[in-house]
Image 1 (cartoon, helix red, strand yellow):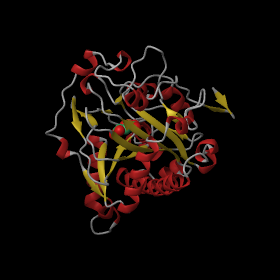
Image 2: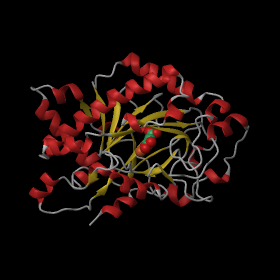
Image 3: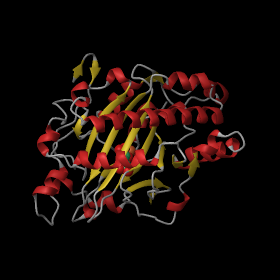
Image 4: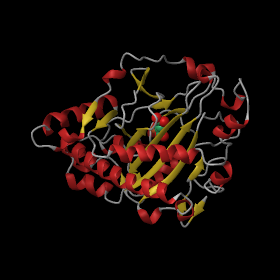
Length: 356
Ligand SMILES: O=C(O)CCC(=O)C(=O)O
Ligand SMILES: [Fe+2]
């Protein structure tokens, strides 16, 4: 669907899982949410590696005496894991608590209130789902709300204006703070990879940031459903807050699923496909998923950071000049996203589109 010359990644409209849970007394999950045994049996969970997911300290990254060793840790985290937990990031704890409470209140709004914020036909932002391309596709056990936060000119006023003013202000502040963290991380990564600083800055100067709030209701048969289908993020960098400290996020490492244990107020940072492309494959965008449980709801807030829609993405020139081998094609962020959202989530399969 085209609007103002921009492609909208329309997804089929699906019912709210939270509403279903609230309105029905049930013990068996509707078939549309039941995953095939094949999908589930494939890989085992492994909790022993959870504690090895790297933790990066932002203060160490930014202070002269500790910078070098923390940069090394960052580099290894992005190469070997594609994921790390960021601590001492500078966002105030009391602010994060406010955000967490408001996010919870937001999903508890009445259905009537939520309808004002539902995806309009063919639109991507608002309450709803993404990557739903057919009526018989299995659905995830979760609801989501998506909003573009940057650039400010791209904000959808019909959604922003309906948000409660206090929540709107919280989202604006959070968006600003997280954007700055993302920009610092991009610069640090450029320095350790010896990508020219200006080249990285130019890519993310007009950063395109969106917020996605995920809500996974409890499920009486958690092992038969999936909260969020295995995927890797299309973005450059995702910065995620595990809101209510309920486990659910898992990343795939060496064929096993590893839990990313919630650390209070730490930010989970992961490399997305665009960063894998820019770094010519040095940094890896890793497959991850969210599982649900039988008695606790789970919430997370993801912030995605990508180059502006018209910006051309491809392996950084200053890197390829040295490495002499270019692994990916170049295309605009918009074209890359068009391809990403035209299909259902399926691990990392769409990165193949960019491979040379
Ligand atoms: O809920 C989570 O922890 C994962 C969310 C996620 O991967 C996403 O929104 O892309
Ligand atoms: Fe993700």
